[in-house]
Length: 412
Image (cartoon, rainbow, N blue to C red; front, side, top):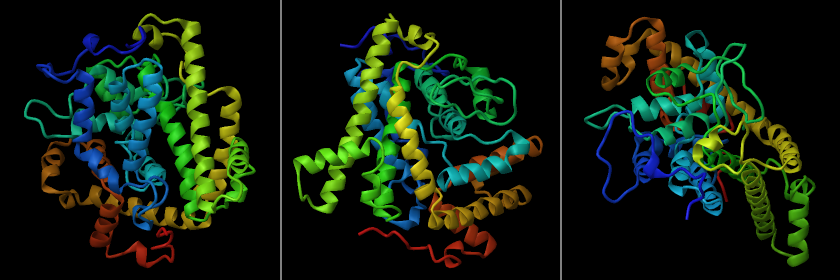
């Protein structure tokens, strides 16, 4: 039984291109299935989460991360009486727009695209599912429902242009954001109004917090495996200190690997239970009678308690200094930034190097901005592996031969 504020597939606002609906799948199930079968989803297998794809078989990639986010999101959504199929669709699609090399690649591409409207991975995900996936006879993109597209576009909160320049980076509904709406999102929104000024459905809000939970958990696990910090250091951090203490009381003398796994498992549970508790309280207080009332509530219904959010910020500062900016990681960040900075101007000057299926778009491009956006689409779609291979092929320079970081953190 779904709650009254859940998104009911029978009341969907439909698709940009009308289709006859499936006889045995709901519209949101169909969205989820199309996302799973998309080329962009498969490419997430070889896209960085934190470590570059070649650096080890045990580290998370964008694909494994997306699967973990979907699992957490389904759990929370089910407990809250929401539509788990819509929640899963948004969760699986939320990282489709990431370029190679994680946030390092995004930062590099955004800088290169600054004269042409910038680059934002959330907006790029919309561009992928509405235009760049070109497999169907009747339309470009996946022709997803309004609800799924809305969730992808604004699961982090409203996307509202205020004063300022540059692409918007929403922050989990913690206040208004500044800047211009990213062009990839603005272009589609002009055709199919996603009501960017409101919050998203409760299902999309769950997907956003599930993302926070998943990466807060697995980045700690990957950092330990990479030996960038120790278990003892983690055991002194907020939230984790209580988790390790509980494990030590229940299992004194437990094996090192099992001890840290049990502690991180409890940490995961603390985050999930906190979100469920807050969401239940917020929904009970607001008492929305429909999904629309959730969107118009003026605040996020699904979020962490202030105390836990404060503790998570401490953990994130720790991860930033000890993992995201670890010397080994910084060296590789510099190398892969160079890859993007080499490829972009090369394709701008010589678009003939683009694959044949991109040539029609290039021929129809009206001006430098249009060409730049085609080049950005192509580079953003690359996997880590392919970007490195293309860079070596086109420039004759193999960055993995220039650094002693190559092959590090290969797992155990």
